[in-house]
Amino acid sequence: LSLKETLNSVEKEMISKALQEVDGNVSMCARILKVQRTTLIERIKKYSQPDLPIIVGFLTIPAKIVAVCCRKAHNLLF
View 1 (spheres, rainbow, N blue to C red):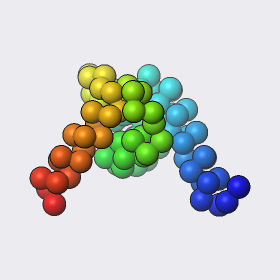
View 2 (cartoon, helix red, strand yellow; view 1 turned 180 degrees about the horizontal axis):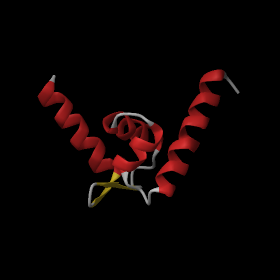
View 3 (tube, one colour; view 1 turned 45 degrees about the horizontal axis):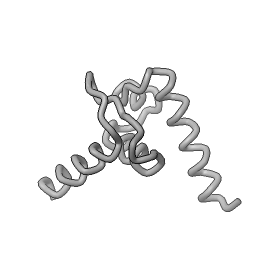
């Protein structure tokens, strides 16, 4: 295992445990992990299965839709 693979594995595990702890609430998870919510969403997209639901606020959204929305928002801003 390389350092990069090990760090990715640890990061994925921490995100997974934190999401479980807050019942999938991304905003609360970001606070626990002390990262920006947008950064956490990017990491969730990086590690998740496309059909895994993500809770954003009061909405449960499939990860693939979050990924599309984040890309569109990014393109509008930059």
